[in-house]
Amino acid sequence: MTRRNPILAETGPYWTLPLPVYPLELHPALLHEIEGREDSSAFEAYMLMIFDDVASHPSGIMEIVVNPQTRCACALYEAKRPSRPLSRRFSNDATKPLWLKARTAQQAANKFYRAIVEQAHEI
Image (cartoon, rainbow, N blue to C red; front, side, top):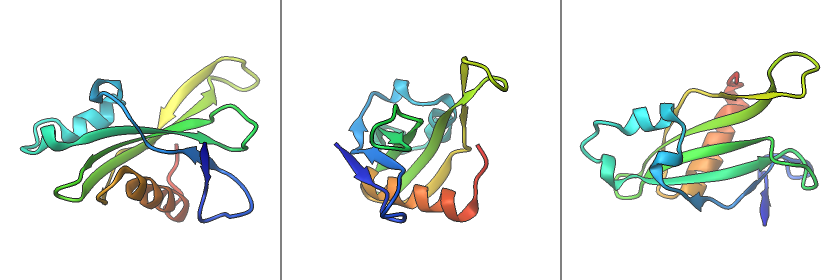
């Protein structure tokens, strides 16, 4: 089941509920952000699939790490893009990791999405 983007109620994007994953499944840039922190073992890892349309394939994923005790979260968005114009091959591009205050993965996803939209982060 997917959730509708709370900012744009009539259109996508849509995303899945946060799914727990093993930290090693996360993007290296996100792992690098928590690596070496005193609280690195307290972070929980999550992924959410992003859909531009309910009937389409995922257009990307949101990856999130959250430490619920400190309300500290870090997230990035990884999108599929054609590797060159008119190509059928895709490459993955990602935003830079962004630190947020959030207690849950869902809170982090909502805040991260707003930050991307409001700050027009380039992927």
